[in-house]
Image: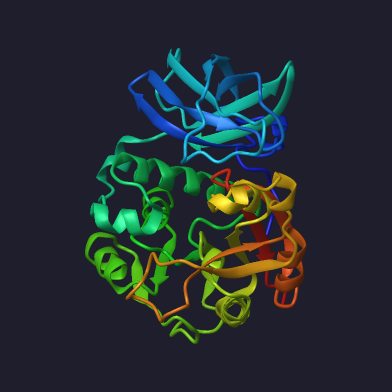
Length: 357
């Protein structure tokens, strides 16, 4: 497979090489030739000064910015406050513009980016799951769920392009939920054969009824009914983040079995950034931050009750794992091709693995 850069025809390498920023698009719309974007962003190491907006690699101007108040839902490292932004611009060319990159600057120096493909009219045809399912999967409702899915797809699509994945590839969205990512793969890679699986039977039932991929409910532990070497790509957004170390190994073996030689496994983890920005109980908030922000190995001790009554008791966890732990564990089954800190949605780390035999 050819190793090419995503967006190479339009987006300069210097933008693509910038590390991802955390943040949220509260609004992201393109109607005819008018682009409207609002939200907030922050770099994980320091407070950025300014944000420049690039569309398909062309600088359109700087965003209006303001310091975002820190709320209970916005947990940041000490002294790093979010920077709110707003950008409204009439595009001066054909309205087929496809990609937005917000480049964060510290003084005159670009330090990070927050990227997303721009919405298309066809995206409006993607069915929207009911609120109780989107709450369960992502903790959001309505348009925010679709924006989140598009941003996830942007990060995954960049890697599919980077590694030359064929448009007709067989792609499994492992832990697909109610189609947050799979729906965009179906809409934007129409030649791909898209599969989805999850332990949540209600989500799978919704996907089967409303999406055209092949969706299957799988047990909490393998095996699955997929054939050996069936998939060219397996994607796992927020799956390893809920599995104990033992269950991770069970599933890594299964993913290796169903992945074709030369195929890629893209998986997100909660690494150092997620660990240091996690909500803390009150007694830990009273400790110096340095006493609570060191992640070594894997911490899979905290129960997550999101799927209470739908999975075995004590199965579903909130899991944090260090970069080195993830690389060491995954190396037993795959070649580790890359590890991108905050590489998925600017929050989770993204590890890129390949089955070489």
